[in-house]
Length: 294
Image (cartoon, rainbow, N blue to C red; front, top):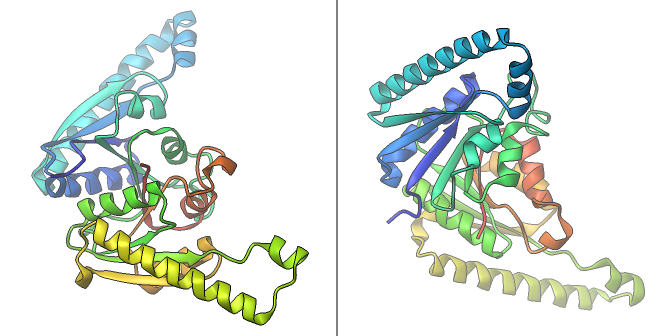
């Protein structure tokens, strides 16, 4: 049984939002969810305050509301025709983030388009609605960057054996039950302090690497067993390297159509809201990204 009981999609009727809605409609039957909630934010309290001072804005608000209602109805009809999925329209006042997240909990999957039609890769996420949703959500978030032309078939899952990484792996399997999973782990480097204050011999470094590699392999095997994954659908990637660079390289190498990762790693106390590796992936890669936390 899926841990997800509702799917909420934020839409501003842009091309990216339409792609997010299309992906949500594809996922609904996979997750056993009966309908998709299409959420559109009308305005914020600041706009309402100005509207009260300038009554003419009331007429514009009415036109905006009618346009949003018609656009949501068109989107819902399109998804019903293409995917056979029922959609519920939600018009809310507030910011896009608050409109999307106010009633969401851990049983919801929040889906949002990740891009700006006027920006290039590398700038599309920074400070965007998608990034703010990921930072603020108590629900898992799927950031859709690509056309939902097919179900997910190749999922890259960076793991550091934290609770958040495990949650991302479990949810990735729910979203893509037939996909091949590529579990990637970057071995932790030898802490610089050991080399600065007590220079190590080549034998010391070799013993350290052997212990790290053995420990990581054992933890990876245990993770696969605990999550009940089919060995035939799992590939393990364990190597030394800078995690963000490794993720980018492996995503290209395996032609991943989804990257699933935890919102935090083990070093969450030194991060601000969201892990640095997750932030890097959201800001610099053009893949769909699933972000979950324990």
